[in-house]
Length: 391
Image (cartoon, rainbow, N blue to C red; front, side, top):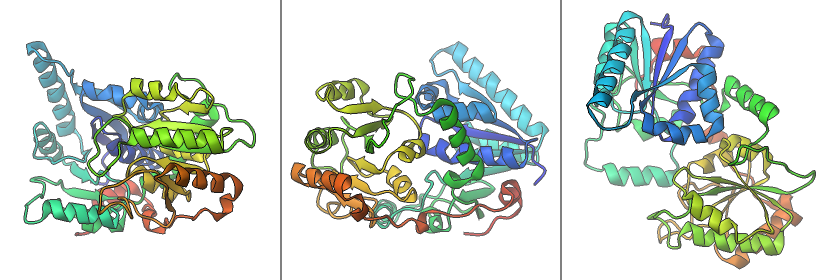
């Protein structure tokens, strides 16, 4: 099966899945240019969220063909079109060995038909871990509470189950009974890093209007990962209220700083613009660039709630300033504890942290990150289809 020259990668609206699949596909193409890659969104309704992230969308287009299975609208014509597209896809997988890649249970319709066609065509159906990094201790404990006494295993977890790090074995063993193979951290794949460098060289970092973000020489820069206006059960105080306090603290302590705000896809954009309009004196740029690009420009990151992007910050060797006010049980560690995490929940604490960043940046704690990164095997395709290891 190491002769597979065709890959079908199933995508949805959640960027975390694409963050794994796209670097993987890029590295496969770099190692074996003859492999044809076909990215398939299950619905056209999932595509606008990804288009908004110009780094991921341009990456998909650069690597392979991009299409959708369903037109994402009701009606008989839409159902007929979906059936026709599915039939064509199934035929292509039956006629040639294919790697089918997804993070979902393959027993779901229409994935079970795709997996069947893939296997009939002498290919391999693969399920991959959605998360890039191993779970933190707190997240693993939360998962254990939710899954205690329950059978949460996928009905069809593929012919292979891809993990990106040895630390994920414990995280995903309740879900998969398939042989597993560990393929290294996608964020660190050489082809992915080369692509990000090319994007920056060509386009710089774009704001939400598609304009190049400018940073003055010597200007301090912080990356702000903003959720806002959604209910987050672990928080006592809504994130948008904490960020208002934080922007006031910036105004008082470091008004010269550049604020790179990366909204979460679920963030209410109009409400964000309304809040930022109250701070016209601050140098703010809203961007949908990839976290690795945003972090490459900053020396401090700021979070209003626990997020998997915190691990990106730690992997980049940067301090994370967390302004979240958590419910009891979360207030000390959040969900992504690390020596490089600094908590500042009152405005006085925020101001003190900002003064420290400006006046004594060398005193900020450095994160632990070796536990997040794992080297890839020499040949990804061969490791994927020929060399699984049992969980």
